[in-house]
Length: 182
Image (cartoon, rainbow, N blue to C red; front, side, top):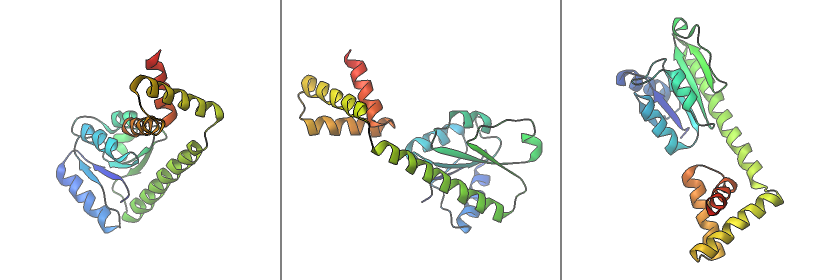
């Protein structure tokens, strides 16, 4: 699974594009027709690539690109006339239509690999915490242990689960616990 979301305003276009990707060895996780559906799919996947057209059922691709989480990239497939005057963030790669399958497959491969390597680098960076970060996490555990009568392993597990559920780092979750305790 490559964590690919296919999003086009018309369901038939989305299904056709999904079929094209599947023939190229990609298996999209979701097909969507609205930006709201795409945002919901992004939450459940955590990272990946959105392949979409210029317009979705409820918003333009430019609006969607502004709401995308950091671990996502957008591959915009549209006619040059529609995107002529638009400016996109670094999260967006544009392919003009009509397009060649080879261009689509190579671009998508590059984007998926880029998302995966970026996520891996950030995970590696977070693996090694500074002394200050460890102290902050330990203080948050202490608060949970005192206030909610948790053991140290229970407090640690609670912080981990909250971090995973909210999509934040354990340090950010610990800081939130400390802020709420003040």
